[in-house]
Amino acid sequence: MKCMFGLAMVALVLCIGCQRHEKNQVDLKDTFRLLVKSNGKYGYCDRNGNMIIPAQYENAAIFSDGLAAVHQNGKDGFIDAKGNMIIQPRFDAASLFKDGKAAVMFGDRWGYIDKTGKLVTEARYIATFAFTQGLAAVVVASEKKGEEPKAGYIDDKGKFIIKPNFDDASFFSEGLASVKVGKKHGYISRSGMIIQPLYDAAGPFKEGLAAVQINGKYGKHGFIDNKGTLVIPAQYDNVTNFHEGVASVQSKGKWQLIDRTGKLVINREFDSPTIFTEGLAPVKIDKKVGYMDMQGNIVIKPQFDAGSIFVNGIAPVQVGKKCAYIDKNGKMVIEGNFEWDQRIIDQFTSYYTLIKGL
Image (cartoon, rainbow, N blue to C red; front, side, top):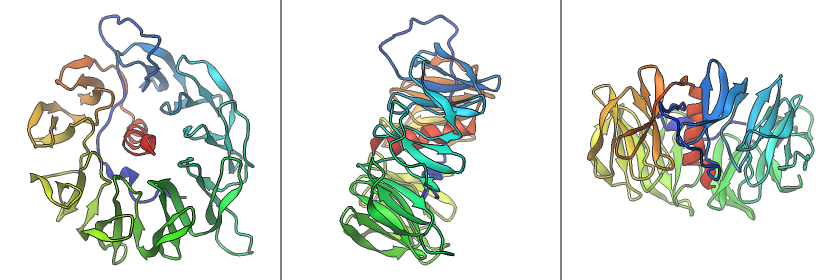
């Protein structure tokens, strides 16, 4: 199943990797962890750059719901914030925990486990999404011979609450979920179709609006409300989801920032999309990245080779080929000695700008 409509549309450059010159005291009550990579292995440090879990895993994911998937000896398991192996590695693949459940793979089929590692559904799904608002989108083989697989929604016991009648489906957000019927996308609630399948692409609802595409694969993008009313006209070549009241929109190769009424937030153009978190957004000027506020004021001088979103008061930046973290004053609070990893970038951005808040 495809992650519908652009989790990857936030083209931010994020690097996870951190370490300070001096020894910092570890706060054992702080369970915030940053996924890092060193010498080809993955581990985790805290917000001060202290290595809490040594870089020892062949692969790993960010923490979600207090656990993180790690790959060891060819299998996936889950650790806690102290590095204890809570669920032993026995899965062929594993996803993030959300609402107390995680999808795991046995062979070529997926099922869901709880935080004890107990399988709470059958492992029979071709593809899965995370649980949000009590339901998870799954894809199953069609009961009719020769038909393509179909998508529907299950509860946390594996019972189909919404039958698998769709050609694609996404997660629930703000009470609605995007589904595909034939070649078009619409939106359903738990009780049925709310917005008819009229769109060539349809993203999740964020802050009351969802991005949609009309007039074919190369058509234009706009935003609808939860009644299906096109409140921001489909006039853009590409768009991102709204975050902190702002979305990036593209026209003629350039990006601008709009508010929920479609009005420009900052009267200038950018070479790439950006996203505001904690009131700041990375911006590239003359090939260097700094940070601006919502009025367009540059509050952190462009000096980094790349940079991404602020989370819990710190943001990752690229210095040469390494990664570091800065605070909202631009002070480097964690100096970088870890490797750049694009997969970490994508996970971090998607999780903190979309998945975590669902």
